Image 1 (tube, rainbow, N blue to C red):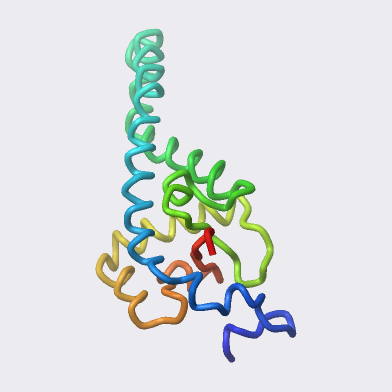
Image 2: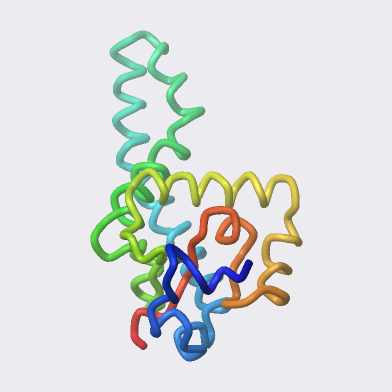
Amino acid sequence: MSDNILNGGILAPRLDDWRVYDGVRTRRVFAFLLDYLFIGLLVIPFAVLVFLLGVLTLGLGWALFGVLGPIVALIYIWSTLGGAKQATPGMQLMSLRLERLDERPVDGLLAVVHTVLFWAGNAILTPLVLLVTLFVDRKRTLHDLLLGTVVTRADR
């Protein structure tokens, strides 16, 4: 069954317009790099807090350094990609947004699952994650296919 038909109706005309996918693959890569930089910068103040916590707890708090990056990244994704704009700051700079094919808004949980599947896919099938975009419609990645999402140009 075609993924163009959902809930007994046809997708919004905007999602069927090829122009909303023009340049998405390249923009996604740059948005990822920007978000990676932003998360790295956000880790710095939290690392200072964990350091101070470690001093206060005689070193026990320093165990949080092992999970600090992923925790900051998940909070970042939850609050931005799962927010009203449905885009991280890197995606906003690249004029991208994540959309669901059923036209419901992306919530924080879906945003986090989307990101976790992205990282899991990269850990296991690194080249396949981006290669899939060359062969499927709407330049969707493997985790987009699994979750029924698509990344589109927000400026079109």
